[in-house]
Image 1: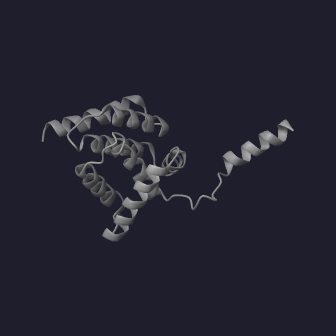
Image 2: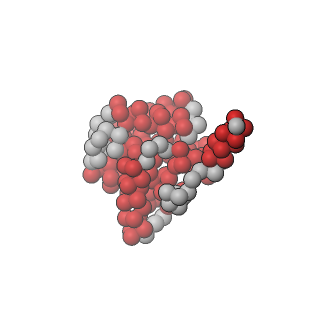
Image 3: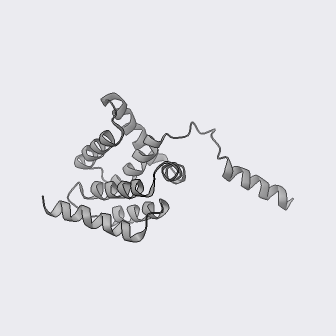
Length: 153
């Protein structure tokens, strides 16, 4: 009986249930993680949404209609997700280390877009950086780069 229980959990972890809908795309996974940072302080500022839109446009070169749909889906996913495993897993699978560091840098840019530094946003970025296997030194380095760039504007 113990073996059948172990086998069940191994299969469940190896093959997540997709009955909840199709697996997210890399674009949606990235956008959902970024949305999660933008909404971490329980306030979505227009400057954060504008920056998120620009960052997604630059990263994925989407037409306006596709970008609108991606923003809408990402917001919905971020608000409904119980955890971020499926998003983080997909990003780790397809992004190299430097791309993951760049994603963390974008997270810092979003957190400072409204001109405020909020501890809830920092906590969310720290947690996501850990899940993305971005080192603490690169987490700090990207934070300082974004802060220095913001100070020189």
